[in-house]
Length: 280
Image (tube, rainbow, N blue to C red; front, side):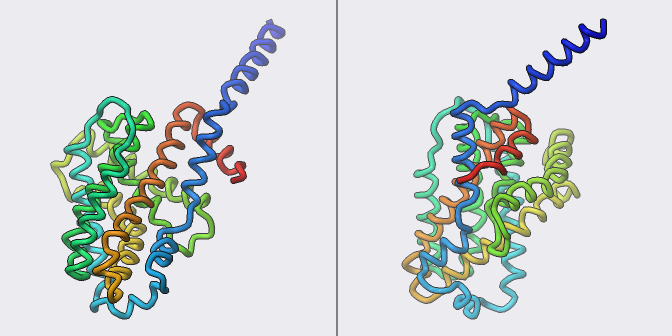
């Protein structure tokens, strides 16, 4: 009896070990995902496009700009959440339409850049909704069902993952730590939305999630606004900055939803460990 149990235990251990082995293709996908998630921050990319330090643009911003951007960011995220819940459905898995979404926001960026910094408050909700549509498109292409509330909230989560500040020591640490911080808020918001839907817009679970994401996403929104107000840059490169903005978050989305797909297959702990051990 004891021998049988011991043999059964060994077989179980062997089976578990066999399961926790990445296939060659999955390991390659994880490595590509890590490469995407560890790309330079959006601040570095915008500074490279503008061709001068972004700090120069801060002096040109109107008074109380940070407060206004924070309020605009939360408004954009609430509208984006509403948009995600009401319109994002499921469809057959196919290629994501990345180029189309980049072209749409590039057009809105050109118009906003020509008008001036205050156009941000009109353009931001629009570009955020388009960005969420693109992120959902990428999630679908990786096999996720975007009709599920949990997946829709994870699409919103990407805006926090892609909002890494230049002060963060590493994207790897930032990626997993931000997911850990948001996990409880996403779970509570998903439960609330499943049970009550969007009937209570000021519900604490939703407010907490939006505030948590806005605290990171708002940083890159400010950097985007600063680039636009720099003389000449605003009118000429507003579309290019928006294009770069969208491209950055598409890369974050692709990396994130590849990781999420692999977690469903191998478990989060094993994927996280393998991710951290990968050298790119």
